Length: 172
Image 1 (cartoon, rainbow, N blue to C red):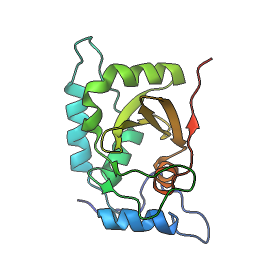
Image 2: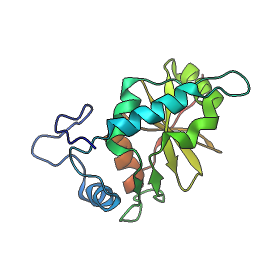
Image 3: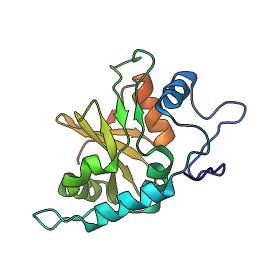
């Protein structure tokens, strides 16, 4: 693992830490620390996703925003440390291979959003798949629909770890 301080996508708010205390605690408990950067593992995931083709011929998109999120947070199983504000919190596992067999679903979401989408992980022990787009925005897909979690992985983790109601994506 390579230690890195200039992590792409890091949005420190002036005068505050990168994450709210409850999120920072959950991340620390999961093994994350500032500068965490495992690009070798992220590239292995990228290769595995690129080489997979669904029975229908669908392939995964792989792009820098996804690889950067995998490098920093990949492999972490993050358990919330506080109850949710508006909805229940759930454990998050950052593992893009949990979405390996969802290439068509992610292609469909990307087409609807007019971007490309890659798998990011799962929440709630597989109850929902997490996805990231080329701009770094994060989404959750479950049996009830598609949800917007945040403008970047930091905001998405904040939404998931604090139980803030995410915005539902609508068509049309």
